[in-house]
Each structure stands twice: as structure tokens, then as C-alpha cells.
Length: 418
Image 1 (tube, rainbow, N blue to C red):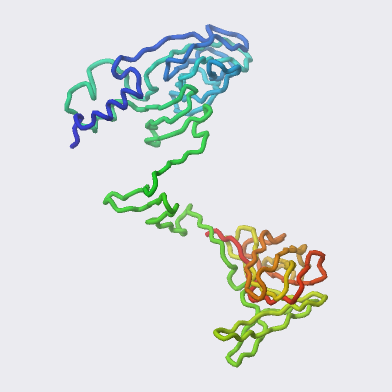
Image 2: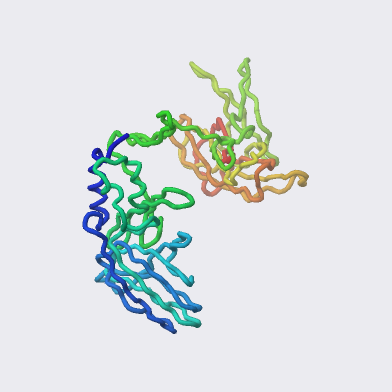
């Protein structure tokens, strides 16, 4: 068991963060509204020396009061989030009667205006204290840890305080406390709002962070230098766990031309209705052979049609990837059409509006990779049959390619959540 004598540094930190541990807790009572019967700002408390302000609302009335504070040089008050001592809810205004609230201090001025009044008499009193707002027992009575003895188990630290806050003069900062229902909490106060800001933990160069199981084995690890998360297992089949993948739609597109063992080239996919099929070409090199679909540098539609089924978890976005090379330069336009069919839907429906994607040819006679994003897929939902048509027509206003195109692959891609 570790002893109190080994934790002197912890006690010194708590004394520094919690005025009153070593010199006694100070408090000041205050009346904000003695019994108002109208909307009113009420009297203002000078709160610069208090870490916590408690507010009690009494009377029989219908109305709303708000908790507000400001700095010395500010012209306007801002709402501040306070904690209901009864149910631990956090909000900046209340209609509760009776009500007891714990508010962060550290402001130059604090007030509790009646912002809405309908009827009745409203009484609001309060107290500023240097003690951190707590759910536990008071500081009076018999001496307790760490004052009871000089040799004390740190297990008794739970009896010291239930909450501690490190706040700047505006009331923003970090609060550590124990919720009686959900357990230990660490929250950020930003602009008077609980968890109202982004939060990051910064590691020094080369350091790691993570979690270990009860046996000391690393279950989750983050490496600062690479941004890599390792030693982690995500079961996408667990209830409540969603895993999204971005990949080629299975069975949809791929190589456009096959080359058999005799070197003969043949089409893999269907010719697009109303278009001319490109030329199936086998390119035999010194080291390898590939099949390409040659879209000639002549007028007219040339293209293919493809079909597959969208996964049950398809997200609704459709992309496509192409591998193209040419001996020419300039831009070419990949015109992509889609149409989806549900179960029992009429077949052979009209295509959706074309998605024209303009790409610039790269190094001559070298394969270049292109991605068409956000292809129009009106009416498509997960589980549908997807049909896609790829067309190239050099007469398109944005198509300036100076030579034929050799298209090796065309692949529809999508995001699927499991």
C-alpha cells in the first residue's frame, strides 16, 4: 500500500489548486433579489475572489432567472452554466422553485437577473466561497484525510473532495468530479458552456499514449510521430459499431478488355446502347501484356455499360476510377450515366442526367489514374441494382484530347457502412 508520505507532491498540488485547504475556507453571503415582483437585474456580487458561487431560489412565482457574469472591463454579461444540486443538470437559467445551484466563480462580477416575470415573488440569495463545489460532506467536525495522521492510505483520498476545478478568471477551464450515477467525469468549461470547446492531448516527440487491460497488455496505442493507431480491434459486427469502407463496388467494372492465351483481345463488358463499341486491343510488350479499349479520335459516342448490386450499407455517394493513357495531350471528358432499379421496378428506364468529368491527359503513352467523384445517382438506394454507362465523345465542348484514348480500367467506387 502506498502511504501518504509518498504523496506529498499530490497534497501540495491540491493546496495550490484549492484555496482553503491549508488556510480554511472563506465565504460571503449575498442577496440578489430580496423579493422582486418584476423583471430586474438585481444586485451584483463582486466575485473575483471566489472559486464557487452558490445560488438559492425561493418564493412562489412563475418566471425565469439567469446566471450571468463578466470581467472587469467587459460591457456586457454572459450566461454561465451552473449545476443543479438536486439532479446535477447543468444549464444557464432556471424556473425551478425551490432551487439550489452551484456556479463557477473567478469572474469580476456575478448577477442573477430575472429575465422573464409572470407572477409571484422571487427571492434569490447566494454565497461566494473559496471551496470547490462539492457533492460530499462539509469540512467541519473531526479531522479527516490528510490531516488525521501523517501516515495514511491514499485509498482515503476519495473522502477529501468530490470535485476540483482548474479555472481561469473567466470561469473557463477543467473540472474533475464524480457523478453519483455515471461515475468519474472530466469536463471542459468554455465560454461558460460545459464541453463547449474542442479538446486535444498533445504528446512530446516520439511519445505514445493509450490504454492497457487489467493484465497490463496494450489494447489501444497512439504513436505521436506517425499518427498511427495500433494494438486495437474493432468488431464491425458488434451492435452499435459502424464500420465504413471505401472500395470498388464488387462485380462492377474493372478491366475493359481481356487478352486470352493466344493473344486475342475481347470485350468484357456490354456495348452501350446507341454507342459504338471501342476497339479491343492487346498490347504486347517485352515483359507483359495488357488489354485496352481504344476510344478513337473520331466523332460519335463510344462506350460500355456495367451492372452490379449496391451493398445494403451503401452510403449514397458514387465515384469512379479510371486508368487511361494516350499519345496525345489536352483534356478528355468521361461522360458517366447511372440508373438504379429496386425489386419489382420496371426495367429499361431512362438514365439519370449525365455526370461529365473533365480530366487532363498526363505523360504521353504512360498510364494515368483519374477519379470521378459525386457521380449523379438520383433514385439509387442501398440494395438496388446499379447500371452505369461510360461514354466518350470528342465533340464535347470540353474535350480537347489530340489523340485516341486507351482505357485500361473503369471501376465504380462507393462507401459502405457495416
